[in-house]
Amino acid sequence: ATRTFTASKDTYVDVLRNTGTNVFTLVYTEVVNNAASPALAANSIRLAKVITSGVAITSVVQFLTDTLSNPIRPVQPNHIDKLNNPYVFRANQSGALTLAADSWTKLTVGSKAYDPNNNFNAATYTYTAPVTGVYNFSGRWYNTTGTCSSMMIAIFVNNSEGVRGEWGGPQSGANTYRGVIISTDIRLTAGDTVDLRGYPAGGTGILGGLGQIDTYFTGHSISVG
Image (cartoon, rainbow, N blue to C red):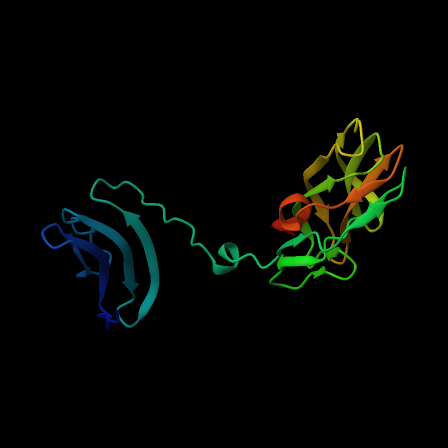
C-alpha cells in the first residue's frame, strides 16, 4: 500500500483484523508532532510510527506490539536458497567389479539418480565439493560371491582415507552375501574430491547385486561456509 503522510503530524500505522470477515486492513492515525501515542484498537497490531519534522519525514520507528504491548517477533524469512539445495547427489552401482584382496578399491557407482549441480563425475565415481562447508555422505557396498573373510567401507577425501565405516564379516563361503554401510558428516573445502571405496580382507570382493538397491553413494551439503 502507498500513502502520502502529513508533514506536520506524526502517523501511527496499525493492522486491524476484522473478526467477522478475517480481513486485515492498515489503519493510519495522525497526531500532533510529539503527542502521546493513541490507544491501540482491539484486534490490532501496531507496526510503526512515522515521525515528521513539520516539513518532511525524519524517521520511522517500528513497534510490532499487540494490544497488551507484547512484542511480536517476526519469523525469519525462508530464503529460496535455504529451501532449494542444489548440492545434492545420488549415484548407484553401474557395473560389476572384482575388488583385489587386502586393498582399497573405488566402487563403480556411475549411474546417477540425481545431481542437479553436476558435481558428481560418473566416469571417475568422484564428487567434487562446489563450496566450502559441511556435507553428509552415505554409502553401501553389497558383496557377492567374494572369497574375503571380512570387508570394510570408507569415504576417501582427496584420495586419502577420510572416514571408515562398517566392518562386516566374517564371510563364511562363496554364497554368503553381505553389505556394509557408512554415513557421516565431513567438512570440505571447495574443490575437495570425495569417493567411496571397499576393502575385502583375506580374499577378493565382488561388487554385484541390484545397483540402485544394493550399492550406492549419496551426499548433500548441510552447512555452507
